[in-house]
Length: 85
Image (cartoon, rainbow, N blue to C red):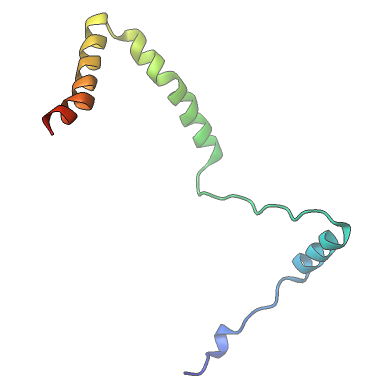
């Protein structure tokens, strides 16, 4: 099947090509491409601030009886499955 004319390979941008040539000549390593994971860095920072406080704040407001009940439930979930198998 013949190739479509719209699928022709494009030449790189002349500025990018010139930059890579200058880097190769001067011996500088190429700059890493920017990482774009689609997340807003400000929102990530706000979420991290809250996440760092969350566990400590929750533990501080629990009573000793509540902490003990949570620990027992966690131990049963972890160790109870292996005993029944």
